[in-house]
Length: 181
Ligand code: SF4
Picture 1 (cartoon, rainbow, N blue to C red):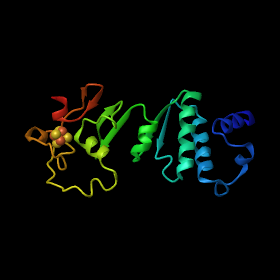
Picture 2: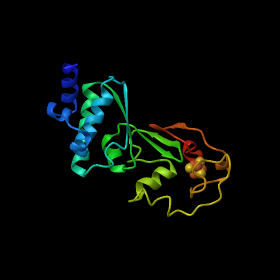
Picture 3: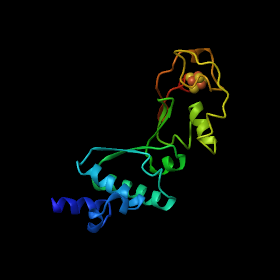
């Protein structure tokens, strides 16, 4: 038991003495390390990290991202990193999946650098993701249509039917226009 605790603390770079503290006695970064230690105790094949750095300052964010990338190698687990931060997504992601209204619209490598889907292109060209949708005019929602239909400047009649995810070049894209390009 003590050996396992020592191993886990070593993996997340916490000191033995820090394991005896209460949560309110730890900093934000230390708390995240403790949470990560608990998550990897079961030796998962996949670690799902939902906005793991959103409450941290920039330098602590960098150290947690570095730790997660290191753990990926050390314990051979896959990371699913969920974030609204495009800069962070560029740094951590080997493959990127872009979601709109609960659907993945584009997935693959280099998605944020060479976007094909209209929403991903809009997302990557906007400096502020949060104001992106609120600033767009909303059209009428059409049942069964493409999930981006209300907002898309490139929509055509065929977009009234929801597109399927299709292979396109080095990735998968959910758009009638892209898959037929
Ligand atoms: S399927 Fe049509 S509405 Fe949907 S993203 Fe593509 S062009 Fe736009």
